[in-house]
Image 1 (cartoon, helix red, strand yellow):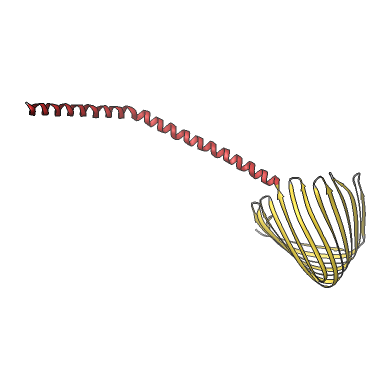
Image 2 (cartoon, helix red, strand yellow; image 1 turned 90 degrees about the horizontal axis):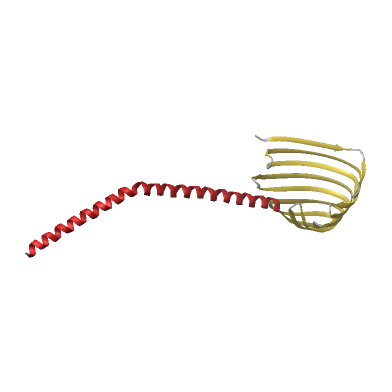
Length: 272
């Protein structure tokens, strides 16, 4: 049975926050006005579609740095834009296998800057980008997953009086998941954006391997029981039928001996 959900959100007041802990500090300032609405229909947790629209104008800035486990991170972002988006997302899947896709058509005017880096025991994830001007564009992305492995590809195009440049790369292994990805975008009047990434969940692969091993052991035990039963039945039949077969064979030998004796007597009489 399908389920339909609707959401709306309107923001008109400025917001700001400062968070400081023993290992990190974060600052955010939001002087923007925004509104959004969406409608989604889902058949189950793995199959759904959602469409939405949003508008935003104003300045948003944030900065953060610190430690995340055994990794050092730094991130800075600034956006002073007026923008509108129409989005659509869909996914379908079952038993760990599925696909998803998303599309974002937008119009944007203003300036954006962002940079982030996370480096440490789990690998590295670095990205940076900048854009300025007025433009319209469309971005699309798709993901395919099968059990513990997923691959994502994305592309976009933008047109307008603007400049845009950016890129990023990721190679991390955290909590049993290996993530590899690259992204890049460049624009002067006409822009192109291309992204690709692969994620491998070794935890799921280990679970599947254990499941297969358990299944193999169970199958082996079943085969052993079947073979044991067959051998037991064959042995019982042999023991049961052996006296009959022996008696039958003895009778054949006895009859054969009698016949040979008669043939010998007949032969002697013919000679004499």
